[in-house]
Amino acid sequence: MNKRKELIVSAISNGTVIDHIPAESVFQVFKMLELDKTNHQVYFGTNLQSKKYGRKGIIKISDTYYKDEVINKIALVAPTATLIEIRDYEVFSKVSVSIPKTIEGIAKCFNPNCVTNKEDVKTKFEVLTDETGNLKLACHYCEKTTTKNNMVFF
Amino acid sequence: MKNRSLVSINDYSKEEIIRILDLAEEFEKQPHQNLLNGRVIASLFFEPSTRTRLSFETAIQQLGGNVIGFASAASTSVSKGESLKDTILMVSNYSDLIVMRHPVEGSARYASEVSAVPIINAGDGANQHPTQCLLDLYSIRKTQGTLDNLDVTFVGDLKYGRTVHSNVIALSKFNTKFHLVSPPELKLPSAVKRHIKEANLSYEQYTDFLEVIPKSDIIYMTRIQRERFPDPLEYEKVKNAYILENAMLDNSRDNVKILHPLPRVNEISTDVDSNPKAYYFQQALNGVFVRQALIATIMGVK
Ligand SMILES: [Zn+2]
Image 1 (cartoon, chains in turn green, brown):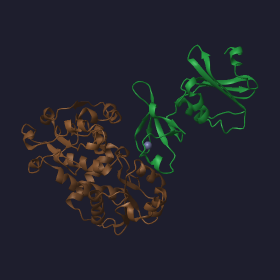
Image 2 (image 1 turned 135 degrees about the horizontal axis):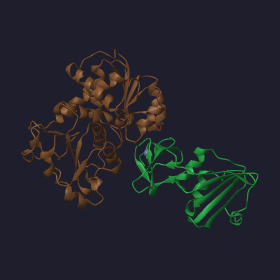
Image 3 (image 1 turned 90 degrees about the vertical axis):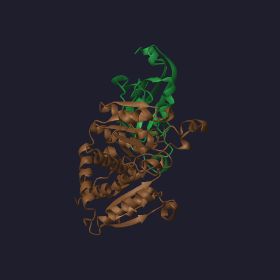
Image 4 (image 1 turned 180 degrees about the horizontal axis):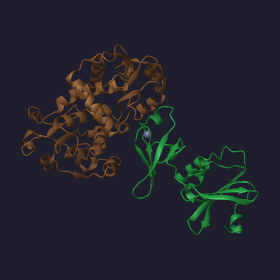
């Protein structure tokens, strides 16, 4: 990554950079990682230029590192995202997010008559891919499938 | 299988399904067996279904068990806003097994996760009704002598009919050739077709009912409900296209049997009832034996 471009959004000394987020998903990622509740410094940018992806977004969170299962959640809305761990201003590691097999408590079941929408039950889905490569969520409880267009995240 | 809940027909393997059907045959020969010896089974019908409830409660009584529970939620603490979890926890203190019917989809799976005793799903909204599926499989095997390699035709509402979905998924384990007859608006959902494809089996879809009748070993009829159509005119167009009349069976195979989950409205004309190919009334009776087999298996007494 070019140092100058990197500095469009302030650099952090320690923490996590999530890059190559589709511009329209930046706020969903923000919400999924509950960044509105963190006490650490957070920088983000959106509608930045990316040769590969058109308009992209980037989020930097100071002094915070994520477990794989947390970060893989964001693959649902930002499958192109890369996760960079920064330690002492250096790139410590860099990985692409991968789509998890199952997710819990992240998305809503679209079926209004599902028990997760009627009782105090945490949602649970198997993540599937349809013929055209779009993600869909098979509800562990009502067994209905929530397609990409119907996905709502908590 | 002992102490394991049955929520969805997918919870059972082919071998486990066959085990239940074999045991149901034994109960058909000798329905009264005091295997439960006074043990208590809860029958919780959060929505009324007299047919299913009587079948389960008969099965429990014939096994020598005692039934506690309710036939509708109206008279219980549920109507005062008690959560499903609290009701299940309370009832599982008093019983060794819970049979439950509930209008909310996924409620039985959730109950099986919070309950200390196993759950049998007797229908959760539009989702699953595995004992209906088992009794259908039992009826198919009994009339055809096998479950393998049959031509099975499903007719009517294939989109919303939960019994059709469960049957297709279960029969996909038995090398079935599927014939799917429905108006275009009510085709089998792709999530269900996925099971046919995963089993490397084939299906054909039809809008015309007549042409498929001579190709069928089993004709499984379902009701097309008016409320499924956003446009009432669309319903009027198709409502009479999927009604079975006796004369339509003239070119059918000798071994064909007509099944229906009941209650029927008008989708099978009453002149079919006296045809020996009609099997829907015996089909319902088989439910008691299948439920006996299931309860005895989960309770670990068979
Ligand atoms: Zn659901």
